[in-house]
Length: 136
Image 1 (spheres, rainbow, N blue to C red):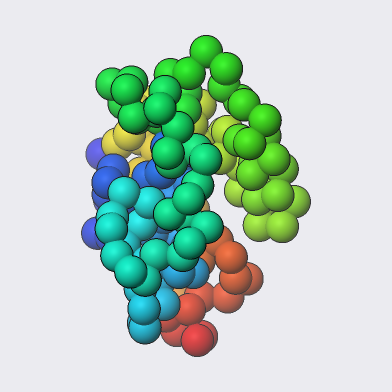
Image 2 (image 1 turned 180 degrees about the vertical axis):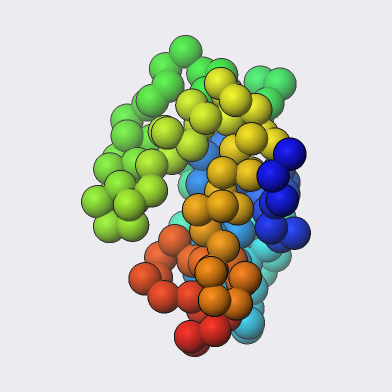
């Protein structure tokens, strides 16, 4: 098994396929967001009221991921995926398919390989083109 960056855990993968460990709000030093599943007053209002996070189908299925929904991808997931593919080069739908087809361990190993900074070994942020650890 490939080495996985220590901060990458299944608990930081949102129902939509977003890896919260790669989010700028999670990586910032002040008012750090705990990720989709965590509760904190520092979590953005957008994330707290997220239609996907609060979807009853995701809450009721075994994995809590959108890939188990018969409507995947729903309109909201398509919109979110389009925005992230266009702005950040990351597809939540592809992430969900990878988790479903290859399993969480393989997904996390792939994320670790793709998003670990080659200079400082910190975790890259999907929202920035530079490493926030060695080039804040």
